[in-house]
Image (tube, rainbow, N blue to C red):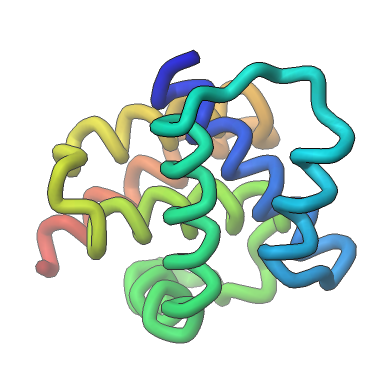
Length: 134
């Protein structure tokens, strides 16, 4: 597997956490027990690390997103767009080994695949604003 697929799984699990109100550890355990997807230690480690980092830094991540929303509020975002943004912002703030442009591009691709119309350009704008403000 690769980082792209690991990021997609992490986003799906984060989305599931927001829907089911389960802890990230419970979501990971459920995923491990119920998936046929083969993950190596590096890929699975990334998923755990990102979900843990988002969980532990949710307030900072959400504040960072909210500060960069133009005429929007966090509670107006779809849960899918919010999950995509949280993964990308977490990478931008806490994953030094991932270039910011990669985080933005991968978030755009996830938005094209899972988000509603215009989600990719919206997410691109928010993330670029965050990077410029760092």
